[in-house]
Structure formats: structure tokens, C-alpha cells
Amino acid sequence: MNKFRFILVVLIFVLSFLGYFSENAMENGKKRILILVENRLTKPLEASIKTYRKDLQNEGYSVEINSNVTDTTSCSVIRRILKKNYQKDYKLIGSVFIGKISAPLFNTTKDKGDPYWHDYLSDFYYMDLDGIWTDSNQDGVNDQHKDTNYDFLNSIRREFNYNDNRTPEIWVSRIRADMLTDLGNEIVLLRKYFRKNHNYRTGKMDLPAHKAFVVSAGVKLKKSDWGAFPEKLYKNIDRQEFTDTLGNSLRRFLNSKDGYEWGVINVFSGPRIHHFSHFNNEIDTKLWNTREGRKLIAEYSDKINTSNDVSWKDIISIQPKVLFYHLLTSEVGRHDFPNYLGGTYLFSGYGLVAIAGTQHSGSVGSKQLYDYIARGNSIGMSWKKALSYLTKISDDKISIFYHPNVEERIKAGKSIYKAVLLGDGTLKLPSHYSSIYKQF
Image 1: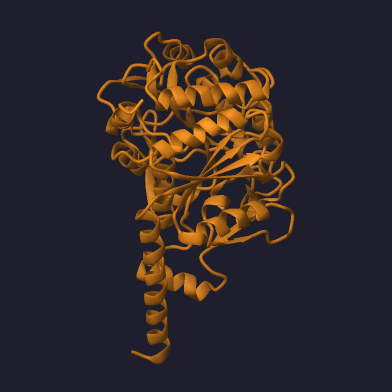
Image 2 (image 1 turned 90 degrees about the horizontal axis):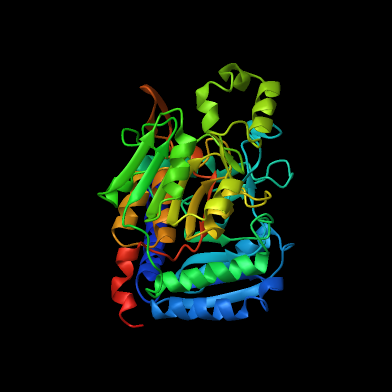
């Protein structure tokens, strides 16, 4: 073994040891949650946050609250706050952002400026605290994410399958209501959310039926490597796929008197609208081939075109009895957009958590997400672990099967930056709260 290779092996061993140490420090002992509250919300939400903190402590978490951030606090400063907190003892596992807290943007260099492949919100920047994030032209949009600044070391990491520095150390979720003007007053919405959160955690909520629904307009989810896999959580699943009236099917599920614990929606969407009508040959596929065509599609995505489309207005009207949503859709997680659909699901009816895309072809689909949830992990921790898995196999190809039977193979890491976790990431499925309920 030559001297250079020997040094690399030793370096990798040392880095592996440090990674092992930090992971075990996090897994052992009391796990910590950082609640980041936008400063202007501190007083109006004082009672709600106090109750929320107590609920988390009752579940064994150590809780810290930071209310020194405003809507103008930069992303880099917020990341430093998270990193400093994490490095205290490596027991920070997640952070819940409450209010209008700065959102990082990400895009590939080649797609910057494209009307369709626009810059997108990416909280992955806050989750990965030791990777290298680069804004090559200083336009405020990150366009590179690397292990280190040294390409040869990055390649050695891949060669030895060493722990990737791009994987997340913590999870981050958001609870934001200021953009939901059609739904109601921000403070009222936030207080209602924390009230139902408390009732859910303490066994005071009239829970929906222990089952899931799936509405899929284009992807064969059970056959694909990418998608949603509620069968790992539920035996009873209502499915409706590939029909001309999926919009009405979704409304029927959302209107269910018995409700659902889990809902999966897979369809082309804009920030505020599910476009089921798109799959009825409404968009000429050739439009994607030109910049002007993609601009037309982007404009189309925010307009209600037919009665088969489902919008934020429908959700406000229905107030669904659904707890958790996996929105395998485009853009509905754009929490900086008025009446964004992900937030409308979250703050309407029984909504507690929504996994939502922030770009076209956006949301994250992974079997591992459902495996981790089934094992009793919180949704936030499951989210973090699933993203870690997808990052590690980012160069591997996974299959997506479209209706009727068209297979596309894409890189596993294609969408890891394009989604956000909305709601409270500490929450688990109802079945995992049964022992906690007994103490109240």
C-alpha cells in the first residue's frame, strides 16, 4: 500500500469514528427538540407554545425554545444557530419552525431562470449541517451540495461507501399560516393547530378511521420504487387511480364522515391546485420542450381549469377529517405562496402533517419513509432517515412506472431537495400514542 493510499484509509477511519461517535451521542440519552419561533409570534402564542413544550417533555424530549429570529434573519444565520445547538452534545434530533422563517432556495445551475424549473424552497439546507453548500454566482440560490471542497476526497468517500457528509443530521418541519389569507387569521389558525395537536397527543381527539386513501393520476405507486407505500402501515386502504373523475374521488375521500389517518395524493399540481384535468390530454406534451412552452405550463398550473381540478377552495370548504398527508405532487409545499395547498391541508380540519413538494416533480417518495414510521419513529425522524437513504444512493437508478405501463428510471437523489415537511415533525401515528394517553 503506498503512502498516499495509507493516509486516505487512516483519514476515512478517523472520520468514520467521529461520525459513529456523534450518531451514538444522538441516539443515546435524552433527545432534544429546538423550537424556533418567529419573534413577533412569541406573545400571541405564549400559552400554545407552553402547552406544546409540556407535551413534548411528557414524551421524554428535552425542549429548547429560541424566539430571537425574525422574518429577516438570514438562512445562513439560522443554519449557524442549528449547527451550534447540534454540536453542544449531538442530541438535537429536530427543529420545528413556527411562523415566517427564512427559507433557503436551491436549483441546478442549468435550470436557474427557467420559468418552469424555478428556484425552489429546500429545508435540506437546514437539515444537513456539515455538508458544503455553494451559491456559485452569489444570487441567493444554492446550486451545489458537496461532501467537501475536494473532489478527490468526495470520490474516495463514494469508493469506500463511507458515510456521506451530505446526509442530514437533524430534521426540520414548518408550521406557517401567514400566507393562508383565505383560510383565516394567522394567530387564530396557529392557536387552533396547537390545540388539535395537544388533543391528538393526549387522547382527546375523536380520531378518524384507522385506514388510508390513495388517489393517483399517473404513477403506479405499488409497482414503483418511488412513491408512497401506505400498505406498510395499513391493511385497509381505499384506492382510486387512473380514472377521468379523480377530482371527485379525492373530494369524496376528503369528505368522508369516518375520515382517514393517512392520505396519499399523486397528481400534477400548482402551488394551490391539483390538476387532475391535466391527465385528460389538457396539456400538449411538446410544450415541455421549449422555454415558452414551459412558461405556459407554469401559468396553467395556478389556474383552475375544469371541475375535475381540486383547489385550496375545496379544502377550506370540506375541512377534511384526515391527519397526515403525503402529497406526491408538484409545488404544493411552496409556503411562501398565497393560500398554498400544503398549508391549507395542514390548517384545515384534522390536518397535522403534510409532506409536500416545492418544485415540479417535487415531493419525495421512498419505501424507507414508511418502514421507519411503521417502526414507531416520529414522522420527522422517519423523514430524516429516508432522506439520508436517498442521499446515499443518489447516483443509483430507481424505477417509476406510469400508467398504463411506461417505465422511467431516474437517479434516486433527483428529488431530495424539492420537498418540505409541514407541521409538527415530532408526531407519530395514533397507535404509537396508546401508552402515553394513559397518563392523562
